[in-house]
Image 1: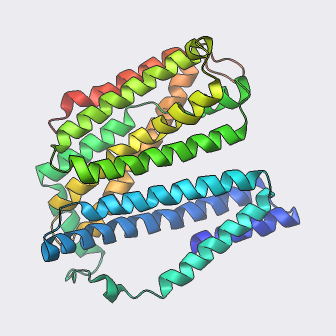
Image 2: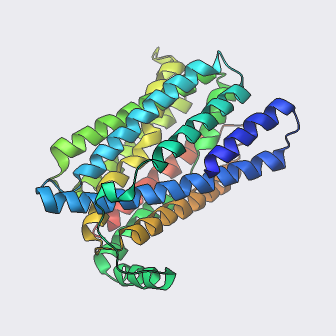
Length: 334
């Protein structure tokens, strides 16, 4: 409901020409608030339903989480493809209006589904105090607490240079926006492939081993960006548009790969009836980690002298980013 109100308002304000940066920022804040509530509720339902399905049908643990991740990736692929094609055909206000109508349709469809049909376990605790007590009890378990701390630190200590790379690609290399759109599609395809591989091949592998390999893989891909910025691939004859479309798209979602096995683990460890509170806490921790990561990215960009027309220090910043990505491997025992 909050997202529908926000995006329809943005569409009509854009059409009337009476919008301002402050009003649009407030509407985007309201939209993100709605999206966050939906995401937390969705993760809680998946965790609770997944545990029920595993108990009732003796299916593999974490199977539902994998399927949900696949569905989200397919939606991301379709959304980015349609959005990329619409950029050349429709005005921004028309796209805002279409998105607002899509969210409105989703709201109506959601209201027609009764929660009893989801067969969720009955939660006996009521009220904020009871939920908070259950959450604190869950967080006192070392296996849960250490996993969340590791996830938080693995994201927070890596300076986020996404904005700097975006301006380097669009302003310095003058790449078309369609190239950036294609990279988003490639990233979602990679996320879909990863979800299928994890569900079919890696469920039996230790999550610690999977996450360690993912950290190494991410660091290697980040180091590849150093060669890209140094124009190494361009001198070999690889066009910048191809590199950005494929490798940058994959790198952007690599940080999300570890969320699937870790969320499966937390869903397994979570005490019954506390899934919603715990997943809300995890999502809040991830959001806080991304804020810290973004702040460190700004500090790093300022320190190495990245500016509107100055990208000479970008290779050094990427090297620092790769080193910080490897650091969590050393406390992967958590």
